[in-house]
Image (cartoon, rainbow, N blue to C red; front, side, top):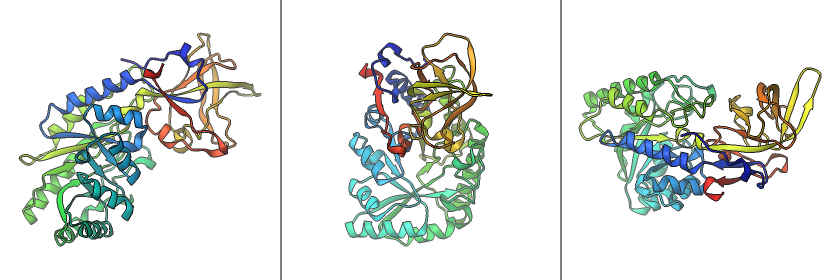
Length: 386
């Protein structure tokens, strides 16, 4: 099923705004559940950083999916949406005492820890409360990923995780802490990955590491968290509205050597929500220069920063024109030269007031919007509102 746009209803809504197709979101979540359920012990946590709109989180919770959080605010958002604390995992390199305390008091399932100082902080705060905190050590597997440099996280030079070579000494530290329980290992190599070879390489590294831990320490951990990273097709959102979750989960099932009873956790974000969302905007002006012509939108980089931040590709569609294509640069009104959504793009001839859709914006769109130039944050409209 592809995303549906009720253009006539859009005419009465002030732009720009984020639009979410609830039926597509529910279909995506149902597909994830069905594909993960083929394998005993596979658990899915939604990476809230992709989109923390509270109404979307309620839909995620209704689907029975857990939460992957990277801040105390995200832990609170998950709990407020009704996601059980027993399905919440908390990662991040810079957890504050306040965030750790919140999570301990809530009784979340697991902290994905990334350094010895963090381990010491969780131990201290858990001791103050007389509780035992479950932790998984995030291991930096030094596995490269075919993605943008700013969203790869698994190389030795990245800030995330414990280096592969340091794991043994970190486990020694954890085992000396009476208020910590080591329940697993955590990994994440990057985002927007479309090549299954990246995930196979991660599986091979996890297999090596599990063998090493068993041979040297007799250690078998009950949980392996492989992170997320599955990408979407920004170029063809209607052809591929739901990612290939069947292949994704099968890749892990076929390549990860699990110990008996070992549970596997996935932290999927973009792949669950990106295609159900679009930034809806209007053409404010059509400006013709000597060599180029521009569609100037009422949406800017503050509303969707990915093109400026990552040079990211998003399809830009005119929802009203059926005229012949012309070549445009599509830009926003923000007072920055980087406020550009695309250049030299073929789009049906556009006139002032035409309603436009910037596609595949359900992930890292609304979540990263900001108020530069004193611009208002775009509101969210769900298909069920119309």
